[in-house]
Length: 191
Ligand SMILES: Cc1cc2nc3c(=O)[nH]c(=O)nc-3n(C[C@H](O)[C@H](O)[C@H](O)COP(=O)(O)O)c2cc1C
Image (cartoon, rainbow, N blue to C red):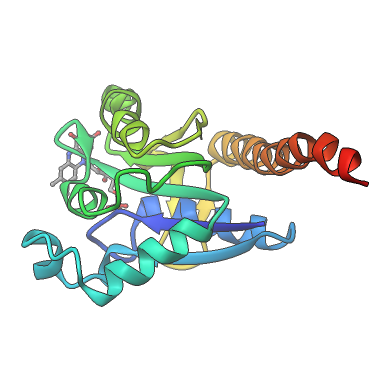
């Protein structure tokens, strides 16, 4: 089982990236192979000038194609997800998320923009043909107690993250198993 984590904040260290760091540690301990990417892996001019052939973008797209799932984290900027993340998502192949389980994570200065993931990010993930987009986790800044060092979260956020990661792990395995189940009758006929 292999996944990509993508940190969509233009800043580092960052609160939304701390959520992702926690997710990485937890899933790695559950035998999930995690490849981590962040916006800083891409040259800004490649993103701004839509250089589809940039080496970093090609490597990222190839790794994504081989992955079973994606966890993407973003800050809320102006009631939407970060524009810098959009410049990357815009350059991905049309079916980049086909057959993948996707878990969105977001942090914002207040709960007022709690629905930004639903009305702004999810439609883009859907356009990239994600197979299953799970309920995201939204944290307001007061719930991220430390993001400069080791991530520390409020008990409520920690609980919601753990639940979401369990659901993500189960969804990854469900997709894996359903793939086998579809193949089984065909194998048995040819035996
Ligand atoms: C340019 C900018 C715009 C922001 N716009 C919003 C906003 O519209 N709504 C909101 O709740 N928080 C907003 N925030 C606050 C961030 O979403 C919040 O601090 C977030 O946790 C930052 O995540 P990061 O540390 O991963 O970059 C904004 C912050 C910046 C820098």
